Image (tube, rainbow, N blue to C red; front, side, top):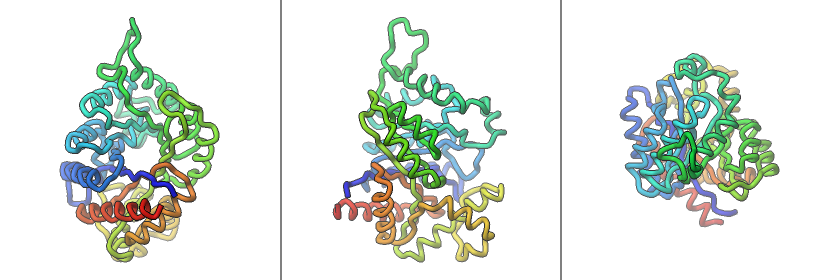
Length: 334
């Protein structure tokens, strides 16, 4: 099995009893550790009006993380393009690329990353998602070298090499990424149902582009690693509670782990959360390694991006360290 790069998707989770300021400092600390442990990318995601997520001003946080690291690629996983004018995103990420050349990625999503009330507060039309393909093309044009007499330019931005990605959890994103010849990242860490079909559609309909000459796929997974399977399962109850709270319409900060998750959720909530968390690898380094081996073999993805919503920052660092070791063993075995 070929070696597969390992990356991190961070939402700057705010644990209960903490603050967004502390969560952002922890994100930087994680990125600095991840760089030393050999992770390939560190992406942050745009979400709004969610008290447990501190990465709403995604471009600002990317600049903060990039400034505190040296080599690891830093980017958006992603920017929800319907919330923004493409020119503004071109200027933001052109600025980031100018400050941290060769290290910035721009993943683009079609969903708003929030509720419809907040969409209106963002001054965006809820129907903006319908123009997503056109907005991606407009964004690409702003990053292209400026033409003589061009009326509107992204400064900085024009002529800069900012790799674009299409993110998705359905067939729409896979079709668009294939048609535009862009790398494709599937959100299987929370929406696994269409994973294999989306990968198949993307690979079989891919059209080469100036950015990419062959298909390139990434898939999201949840990982909670600890010294023992039992400890990891307990840490994982924070994620399970988080999903249950979303179903109940009571999103909040990331809750601390509990001893008995069965006493927290109802059977229907358990079934729904378990389906969404199908690709969660929880356990010791050896347990996680076996799960990742199988996942990579089945999906044939080119890269894996990991979400680890763990309440205690020290335990989260330990999880990513154990995962890096496990993945190193994968590379050695290959």
